[in-house]
Image (cartoon, rainbow, N blue to C red; front, side, top):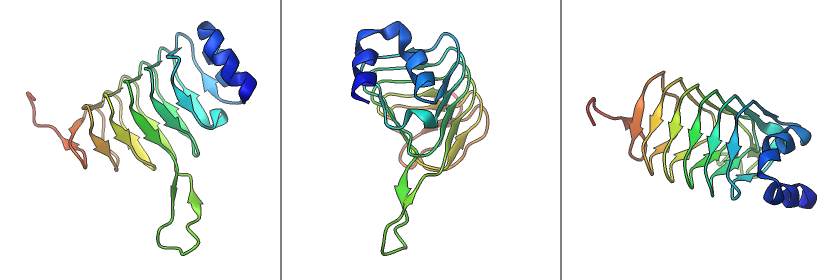
Length: 151
């Protein structure tokens, strides 16, 4: 992982190739900023033309799938890991996250484990998404709720 991080910082054009080298998948035309944090690269599956901005966290304890043309904005956090708080041993749970084609995850937004967002969803800055939403939903707030039309 140390060598991988070194190569990540030195060769921006090779970041998609590094994800593939470590067992994940990344399509064509993807751009990952220097400060992106990917915890378990083999759990990351990225479509074509995906853009992940600086300081975004892809906490891939479980699978994270990003469709084509997805944008993950600065400091957004996709968290595919949690613990079972009903069990006194707090076992690790790794439910997936899936973000549909053409979706946008805003500045400092949070997407929790076991969330599926349909194609064309928009998550407003600092929103926190804890459940699934269908195609074309614009979300804001904590917990995230559909924004009214025109907002």
